[in-house]
Length: 381
Image (cartoon, rainbow, N blue to C red):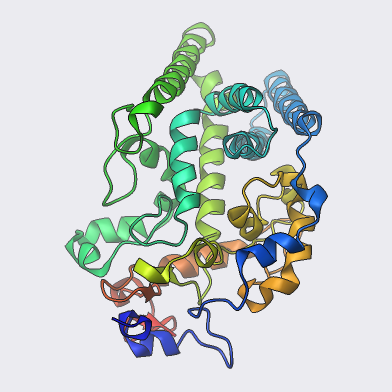
């Protein structure tokens, strides 16, 4: 069967093409061309520089907690929750770099720092690290991707109407990460805490046991603190910021794989590592870019996760001439990324499922969950 014959229905493809550019077509460059455009120093990792970001973020977390504890006024608690939750998210990004090995060339240092940072924010480091590696190795593949992958039309039809509504209504999509850690994505079995899960190979089970033990140790510590200081102070100092962190994580990871009208998904021979990586989208978060370590520069990160976060912006600028229109320029943000709210809401209204047929497909829309302004015959305009 030829590539054209394997694709989704023609009308689904034509509404994605704009003028002489079609995002569904293979790019005219190779991943080696993109790699060659990135300056050599962008690949170098500095453990001291990486650790300086850890020290900066941990100092800020401690300072905020001490300030909130000392003032203890309801006028400032909401500001504390927003700021501290954002810093928890920044700690996750640094632990994320440890998982990719972009933190340093030392596996031991990466593991120690990754465990400390992720355990503090209730993420099982090794369990997540392994599944996230699977996500990067299969990004953009409908069946093999691990994170925010689409569900197919037949699976979607089997969902209860209430489940469909919940899945695409706020705030649930922004609270999905803990559920994903325990139960994985819809249509996939396993848990990030279970060493026998099919997420892991037998050789990885010891690593999963370690990270799961660390996670439960942190839970025990929080319970002990609640017994000593009371549950309300622990909830105010840690619990609410944790929820804000989860919302940040889900928002950022969702918007890097959704919200653009020409993001294809692949099956079979149409998929390649390069084409899958090009289905990600960069986002601008205003002054929060620096706080969460430029994770918004997501395309280059997906293609080359070994690049440290402090070189991602420069690497992206160098690679853009090669990427051409396959690089989707992010909408510029004000001081706060409020523009992303409308992008998120629109995506939740139109990005519902993909066809069961075709090796290059795009999100389709359930008209019952979307207004007429967004759809035409259940497909994207």
